[in-house]
Every structure is written in structure tokens, then in C-alpha cells.
Image (cartoon, rainbow, N blue to C red; front, top):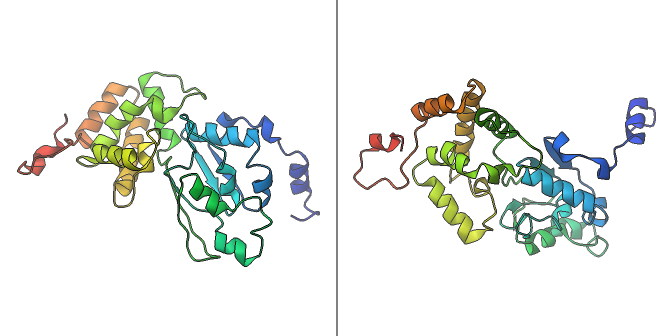
Length: 258
């Protein structure tokens, strides 16, 4: 940043303290790269609380380079590590070794994420690589759902859990036959019971269909003023699939609302 940039200098001089950040005022949290967070933000109680509350509210937490290290002390409601069972990435051990800083940093990001139960993956050193885990369901979904059912959208709500049964009905049961059951089985086998179902969606298991269906659901929500009318039209457009269609069932009958 140039010292001749007066606007940037003013912004830097009036940076909001992390302890004063109110999670409900933001739709997402982004941590940039650099090794600094490994020494301070990874242990900072305000940073940990911000991550935990943002994630619990169903909002996005994005981290780059060394920044995933700030997740080391973040936990979900049952006390297990937030990264456990989730696809994660971050600055790799081989990259840290290449710059001869493995003995300098307080911990290695890759090793720490693996220790905490994260499903760590990486690309070739010094190349771009992205992992996405959970929180695929947008905030608009919960905002309009609250409006339609007449519930106040409060900042302390743990949205995915609060609306779990409704989301099963509106989303998971309408994407593909047996998808809800399969995701629950995968979660039970490989992750924590508190992990949200969309954490287990993948390109092979409903992720693309989920994004397409979410667009339909949120679009319908926006044009309706009451839940019953919205739900009736959703049944007509995207009926609930049976959990396990029989071998000789007529596929046309799979789409009848249950």
C-alpha cells in the first residue's frame, strides 16, 4: 500500500478492533494469507469466537495460504474440531520446507489440519488449489424461510440446525431418490453427527443438483408471501422423491409428492 494513498492510510489508521467486530453485521469472514496468524489469530479468543459464530450461523469462512491455521482451536457445538471430517487445504509442508521455515513457524498448517481430522488435499507446490466444505446453502434461503414461516431471524440462531427438518423437506428429499439417507450414512461413517449434510455432498453425490435446486427454491421463496402457497408450488415443480424406489417401480411414479 502506498503511503501517498491518503484514503488507504485513513482506513488503516481507523481499523476496527477484532474484539469489536459483530458477526451478525457480516455475511462472510475472510482471512488473508501470511504467516502472522499462526502466532496470534490461531490463539486469539476473539478470532476463534468469530469463526465459530460465523460458521454456526451458516455463513461462509474463507481462508488463504497460511490462514487455515487459525482454525486450529475453533470447534463446533459438540466440542469437536471445526475442521474434522471437512475438506480443507492450506500452505503445504513441502512449500514450508522449500523456504526453510519449518523450524521457524509455531506449527505446520498441513500437519495441524490433518491432526485435527481435516480431509487435507493439495495441488502441486506454488499453484492455486481450492477446497470447499459446507455452507453451500446461502443466507438468502434462511432469510426468506424465516419470513415465510413468520419467525424472526435472530443473530443467535444456529440456522442449519434450527431449520433442519424443514430443510430436509424443502431441499434434500427433492434432489434425488435416497440422497438424504445416503448423506446421513456417509456423515455417520466418516464425520461428526453435528456436521451439516451439505458438508458431505460432492460432485458425485448431489452437489451440482443441490446448487441447481437451491436456485429454484430461493427463487420461489422470493415471489411468495406465505409458506403454504410457496410449499404447494414447490410440490408441483419439484416433488419429493421416495427414499428407496423399488426395483420395478415406474420412474414416473417416483416424482409423486409424499
